[in-house]
Image: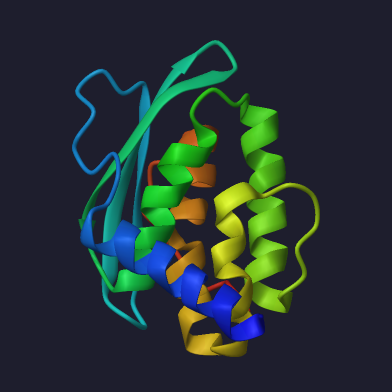
Length: 151
């Protein structure tokens, strides 16, 4: 059973890596943030279209490892239609999940990243787009980095 779940999770990550969803610039974006993971060389730019407190659309562009691209792809799918507060709560859940392996609350397909905590060097890859999300929502002009993320 455990191997079947791991295989399924790997398939989801590979699918989102090879065919990332929402992989394009968003001309009507109301905010965006650049993200960089110096450890792995991941670079991305996340675009959001906000209407009031609701994230109406999200996309990203950039390059990086498979986990980084899959995480950004799943992030953009996950946050559409959520409020800023819901997105921030999801960030906290994902951060806890990728650093400890503990899944709290309904994270949907994002649960595929629960095993990342076993590979400390990959935690920063999985969380990069989420830091960019927080930077975009806070209106930070400087690029976000994963350097402050714990291994």
